[in-house]
Image (tube, rainbow, N blue to C red; front, side, top):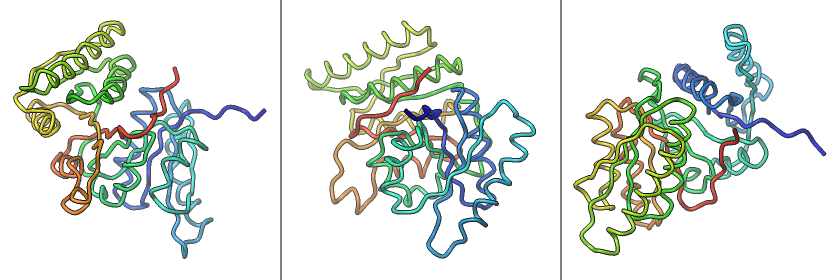
Length: 268
């Protein structure tokens, strides 16, 4: 039986100036969750594998000098971006992928199939501490995934979680939102996570946009967002809601959780 691999925070590097803040964010997450940091590069056909590997390894030297307790690895991959998350989850025990928010369009096909969350970070923004986390809560049962991630930030980082509940008119929808809020409150209370539950003004269809605007105006330093449950041809034509939110998030990091897959979980 092979040795069990350590869970990893994976940073997608592009070998340019954008890498600095992405790697610093990856370090922050690795320290919070006590996981290995993995620097990944998607190798193109004509690129020299050994040359690229050496560049990635050079990234690790100052990390190992300044943070000797941090486990750091490098990984080169080939193939379609869409297949990347499954490979990272199944073969490398990845739990979060850190990516450049300015390249969302490149990673969108992977995000919609991913069993692990993508954290989109603006490479020009200051590195965040993830102490104040906003999360929308709507009618979908998959809200349990985003709430669970929020609870982990609360437990391991002492983050305050602010949940913004959708405002519904139909009784059935009201009950679904109320159930999700009840479950969130129960989980946060049971794990001693500081939290607020706010009642939003928008329905489930606009709840994510409202929460994103709230997070920006109130100085939150992380938005945890549930991706689209149903993706239509029109979405691909005009852009997914999460693409618009990430594009307008400015310096706010967005952790995007895919609701259409069985998500991998963090191991204590």
